[in-house]
Length: 296
Image (cartoon, rainbow, N blue to C red; front, side, top):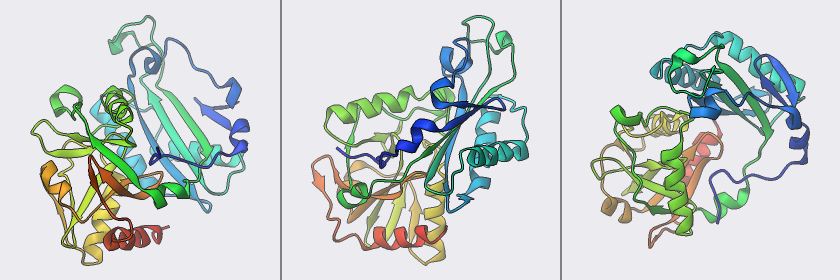
C-alpha cells in the first residue's frame, strides 16, 4: 500500500532539534509532562506546513487556520502570530534546514493539576511544540496513485465534534483509517451525516466529470488550505469547479479523482472501492498539479 504521506527516509531526522515552549531539545530528549492536556485528553490543535527553497509555503493561511481552530475550542494562544512565526524561523535556523522540510505545530491547552477534562484544572500556559523533519514526498505515490474505500465511520455534525477543526482528538479519522487499512486501501473515503461524500481521513477529495471539478461543500471537512488553492486555481484558469453535495454513485461515474493535502499537494486516485481510474487519462489532474507546483 502507498499513502498520501509516504516520504523518502532521511537519516538527518535522527538529529533534529524540537521546539518545546521556547527551548530546543534533541529528538531523543524531547519530552512533555504526562499531565499535559494533549496526553490526557487530546485537548488541543495542530497544523502542519512545508518549508521549501528557504520559504514557508502558505504561512499566512496556516497561521489563520491555527488561530481560527484555537478560537473554536476556546484555547487562547499566549503567543502572537509574529511570535509563532519567529519560533518557526528559529526552528528552521537551529536545524540548518533549507528545503524539503515538513513542520508540525502542536498546541495543547497546557498542563493539568490532575487527570480531568475541565479547563479549570489547567495550571500552565498552553504547551507549544514544533517538530521539523526532512520529508520529501515519495515519487512512487504520484505514479501509483491512491486506492480509496468507503467506510462506516462518518464525519460527524458540528455540534458533536466540529469536523472543520484540526484538533488533537483525531479518533474519528483514526478509526476510518483503520477500517480502510483492513480493506487493503490507502485511505478512507468518508460520508457525512446525510450520506454525501465528505472527505478522506487525512486528505481532501476531488473528482472530475466532463472537465468539471467537484468537491464537497467543506461543511464536514477540516479547513483545507491546499483544497482552497485548487479551487482558486480552477477559477483562475477557467476550469469549471463546483462545491456541492454529491453521492457515491456520482464519484464512481467520474472520469478522474484526486486528493489534496499540505504535504503531498495533489495525488491522483487509481481506485475507489472496485472502480478503477486510469492515471494515463487524467488531464485535469495533471494540469492542476502543474498549476499548483508553480505556486512555490
